[in-house]
Image (cartoon, rainbow over the protein chains, first blue to last red):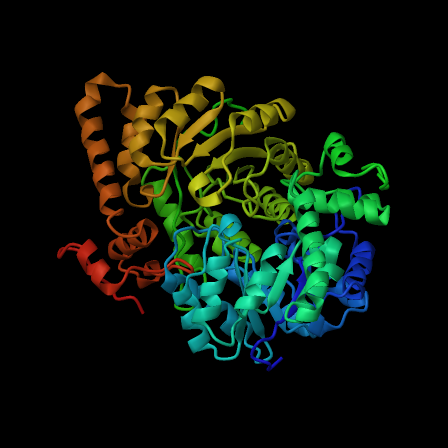
Length: 305
Length: 305
């Protein structure tokens, strides 16, 4: 945890399976987290945007983190999102993570108010970190302006790293903009910049990035991990290129319709478990027609129910 | 409550005072709610954007609603915001309101995910309403796309009114776009369309609107109520125009710097109570220089502390 470039590797933004009443299926989630580690993920970044975390109550979020641990994943391999709109609740979720031995959390800024100042963002993150008040805490910032509506500027990162040295260890950059990620690497040595999109991990690694936290790794963790492990090995260039191609193809396949619903439909097909089809509103599962168009004839097509 | 155009009138989007630790000052909030009714507000729309509701925990929100009641405001005059990103927590906050006798709530859509479908929004609101499961419930939708990032299209309103007749009674339209408000009035007869900006209440009333929920009424409720009561009285046209001018001037004054911080500084000056200066991060109080520029020499200038 004191490695200045932790977190480093391939982290899966884990999907969350839902039962018929659209409540989390904790047993299926446990099994999925274990599967992701077996497939080669460095760790599981559960309870993010892809995990529908902000559609779940604090109680559901805590139970999901506990389910991941119950699935046999080591606390040091879990990196849950614990940031909500209200700081006291972010503090409570983060303290819960620490209470079960999980020390690195992914924190979006408070995301209701838009157009907030850099001073306001620094004050918000500081209030969270000081409210948690635990030296073990490590924070990965979460930059996803297209969803949060609140970008994290360089000035905020610089101020937080100065105020909390060694505590704010990295950033998940889900902007989809390689130039933005590269600028972060160049500006902040020793700061772990993680790509939020699978195809960008490879070029980001070449610039000095730390890896990726991505949604497609729910399906192709093994390939992305191969790219991570061997991207600098010229003797494996062909195999790396082939793995990277499969990753890109999987991502493109999952982007023909709504991405999260598509990833869930593909996971349902892989597991034969209809629990994977569902999303909690305002997100919606694929329609039957979309599912039929997405899945090949050779794949199981469990019906949503 | 069965009046098809309830809510109708002038509602204040109440500010929330904070103590030195940036926690709600419940006693000052009680007094403020009582003051707003004394100043002529039809009711108090507490715990909205202006009230910093989404910066507070569920516990703080429930205590603030209880503080408003403790201030002597009748439950039928309170219209709290109870909508957060996670549906189970929206259900819990709404049930709490009903448990203390408050039946009309203001509901933004779940606001984390952007670009959601109309079906997804209808499913989300339906899950909230059915989750609350109380026939007394009345819902005012909250359209504030510049903050929530999730507009409420006509199709969603039509579907909800059909699915829950008599329950979804109105909308707070904070788009700032009179044409958008007017289109809602024309499309949905008997549906209460409330302007989210003071200057637009008068033209909206002339189109058949139901009134306003506004932030500036923290300062000028008496004038806005006069406009509401007498806008159709030709014999009072000059007095209505004068009141409207004062409302517009107050709003412009509060918009020179950040609006919520300015309204708080002006309320601090009115009350002589420094608790009013503060905002919870990511929002920030005015700087000393801004406060000095905003407040006149004839006004008290309590120091923030």
